[in-house]
Length: 98
Image (cartoon, rainbow, N blue to C red; front, side, top):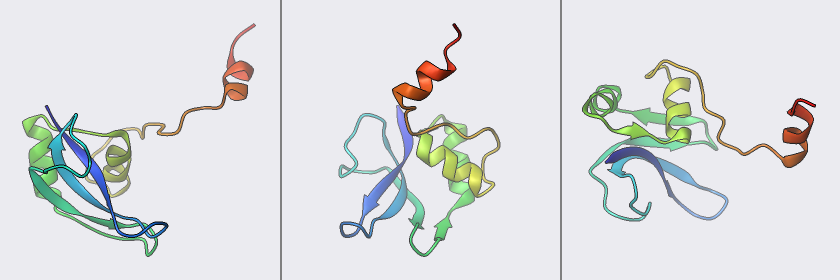
């Protein structure tokens, strides 16, 4: 099964990301099927091939949570964002009904 992932590149504390299509269970440093663009969070710049991303989603590639949130932010995909970070145990206990 294919997934759209954010592949980290660059130095420590200066990470950039490539948006790639790869096997869901493959390592991030492994082979990729296609490179869809890049993201630089430090300069807040990016370049995404919108048509290719939509085509891969139509073919069945599932974006990871972070990749999906980024595609939603850029207006390529519609929907709700997914919480990427886990909630702390204190928040879970406070939300639990008594």
